[in-house]
Length: 138
Image (cartoon, rainbow, N blue to C red; front, top):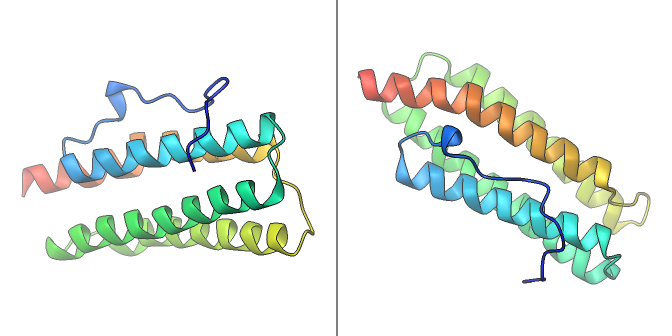
C-alpha cells in the first residue's frame, strides 16, 4: 500500500504527543495513512488502490479507538462516554464514506483528507491529551 508521497497533508508535531507510547505510535500511523490516502487522491490512483487505503484507514481507526477506550475503562475515566461518542461519530462517518465509495456513489477528494487531518489534530490536542493527563494524575 506504500505510495511515494507527493506532498503530505497531515504533519506530525511534537505537541501532539500524549506521552503514551502506544497511543502516540497509533496516532502517527493514522497521520501516515491519511497522507497516503491524500496522495492517492492527488495522483488520481485507481479505485482499487484508493479503496484499499480507505479500508486500511477505517480498520486502523477502529483498532486505535479500541486501544484508547480500553485505557479509559481501565482507569474509570470520567469522560469515557463522551469521548467514546466522538470516536463512534467518526467511525460512522468513515464507514459510511467507505460504503458510498465502494458503491461508487461518491469520490474521495482532498476535502475529505483535509477534514480527516483537522479532525485528528483537534481530537489529539483536545480529547486525547486531556485523557492522558487524567491517566498521569491517577
